[in-house]
Length: 404
Length: 209
Image (cartoon, rainbow over all chains, first blue to last red; front, top):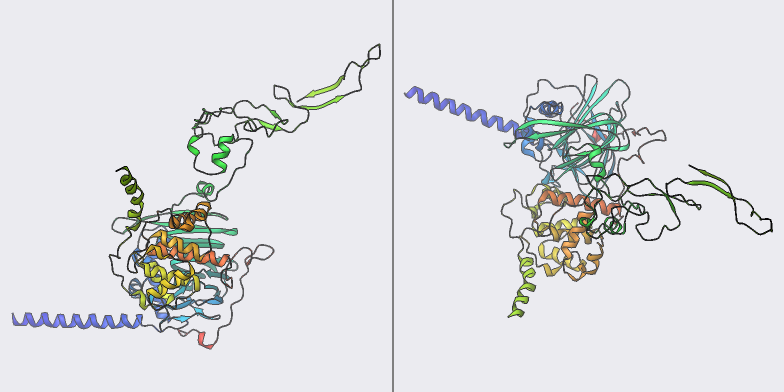
């Protein structure tokens, strides 16, 4: 009994010593000096922590998602990330070189709390600084940052917008591939890669809600704030980007992913709508269709004053203001008197509604008018007066009349 | 008797208007008053609810780029003098700020005049915060909401970013314009221009090699 209690106490003592030594080691990692570049050992460890994230980007629901989400936002998860094993990482380190700076962006180690910005752990970024793996960057308002990749194969340029918090999880050249992993806590990142040569670029930017993976792309943007993301490719962008959204369960576990590709001029949000589905809601367009709108519709639609309920509900029924279901070209205003029309008949009833456009007669600005069958008189010519035997004028005589 | 009924009807909106939010129910992990301006900005992003004092400080940072005030009363005085906030609101420093008050202050800082109703009625104080919120919703700077809705930290920071972007675009402060755009970073053939890396000084050389 005595020997057993001694064994237990020895075991507990050893366990406590081991725990304390482990805490000490981890503390050393967290107290990393605010250098321009990060020690390779830590960079490798962080790179290992991102292995699971890479698999997330490949639609494999594995890995610690909370760690991923918090890497750029607080130091707790980062400390866990830096404690990952270091067996499979490696490669030649690469750096982002600061090309242009506006304001006072700062950087520190990835485990440093962002709210401590301004103390001795943080350094103000200046042109020429080289930022590698394991660096957290803060870009406050009234500040911006532009970086280029070094070595410049492949050539890559990146910009951080004001109000951005981002961590460089991994940045290295491995097996002929320039691997870059960014964790965006909040803000916006723009980047472009000019794919050329033998070295390929493999870059992903992850947010707590989704991940951007590019495919030989420039210039793309990923923005994350208030739990929402927006990923877009510029109007002249090349290649395409893949937006990968993470789906979580009630316990916070990763259930799976869904992805969508984005081409130039398009964007995708956390709604993951197709571009064709949401582009019509992206901007307000006033359709000044004086032809297709009646007075009531012009009042309610063009002025956008919320009286849309008075419009016909579909199938060209009469609305409560009594406007007819067959519209006139000028909406009864008389503005288009003298303008002839081509009768295309009554519009086909639309069950989804009328929308106030495209259901009326098309005007043809012909000074000669049209007949009641809708055929436009293209050419009519009068000759001189026809005179009778007494020399009295008998009126004009139509020489030619062609119909279409 | 009918007069009293009408009085109640007229006073009812005032009762609701003074029923503002109370103190923040949770305690943040850091004291915002100890943070630098940069640290405070990113503190906003992670705090659950924003107090009036914090909102005032955020508005001063947005307007001036820094907050040199020592306490709440000093911030309040500055905002009142510049017309960014109104004393009639009688906001308490430790109470959670509402979306309407923040929207009004953002409109003032960003020099947004608002719509016709805001100009005709809002100046008198009647519905000023509501119309300001509608203006920001119209500009897609804030989500669809109501003016008495409390302000979360992440929503506040998102609005903070957009307001700063708007101020930069309007030229309300000098900006170097560091960006990556189709217009400025492509050549005539449409290829991306990637500048050569600026050589770093001795203090910026890698220390892990």
